[in-house]
Length: 194
Image 1 (cartoon, rainbow, N blue to C red):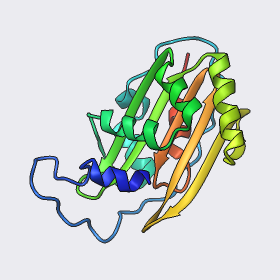
Image 2: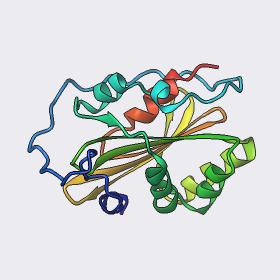
Image 3: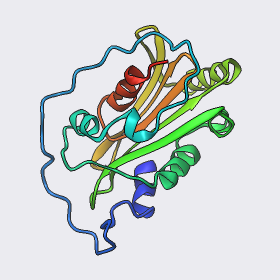
């Protein structure tokens, strides 16, 4: 559903305001990204980094294997779409009332391909409630260096749709993308130091 809504939000339009151009038929390829080691839970409360520090563009391009990816400086439409269409009620309330939050988006111009990464600092009670909601919703649970991660990959249209939720201490990473693995969330979590 999110992918269809992204098209309606105008993410396929030419950033210069011109008409949308057809997407190239092939995505540039690079070798598969290595999975970073996600350090155990952070212990401090340092301020969350901004998007371009959280995942620099060169890292985004490495992760996606696509040199056409750009940082979308106005991530508000994508944040609203993720909260409204991808979060369940408890998760939406927790994100909306989080002590700190950041919303990032990267995409390939004129293609509708967007990856959103939402990051929030949650209280212990909020964290437990969101995890309980995900467990009750049938997401696949795994552990990344002792940190709980929940994923769901659905086939929609021409490509699949990934939703991933990673919890590292009091920080919650949400990735919504057409990627096969939650590499954006994993790399962002590995890069945060307190």
